[in-house]
Image (cartoon, rainbow over all chains, first blue to last red; front, side, top):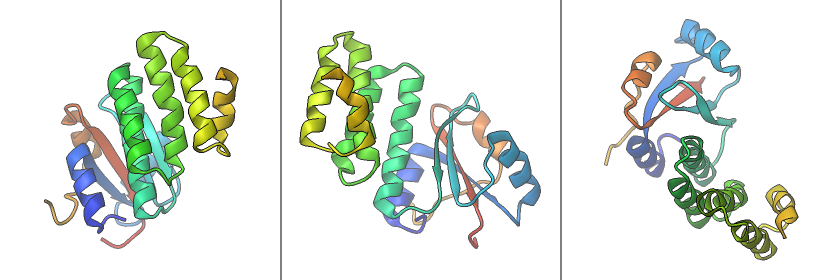
Length: 149
Length: 32
């Protein structure tokens, strides 16, 4: 994943990258692995400045799937800091930029939730549920959104 | 554009200098 120029560009633009090697940095792997309950490689954690984990990627993924998960992490971090306009935009970016990944239906769901948080208008949730009839209707997220119909 | 990711090994230092960015902590067994 990491030699890919798109991954290099995305990581460089959005994150401070820290690598801990399971053997070459064994003590640090033990310390941070215990702290974040991460005991498998590859594992990528996205952590905010308070030290709180905002997203986790376990196992290898192809480039688009990996990038979509990183983008999902950015959106989750915005949601966690209650910046719902940014969260909605970032979740919709996931759907638009990575429409064929598992992250896309999750992004579609949470974009609707983020919009609802901004507007307090339940029509945002209903519209999200309806959107799942057109796209990602077999996904777990479509089932979750179905209660909003 | 950077040709490769400029990794640091200093997690605590990265966290303290995060300044709005998220820290990407990668646990790897791959060769450097």
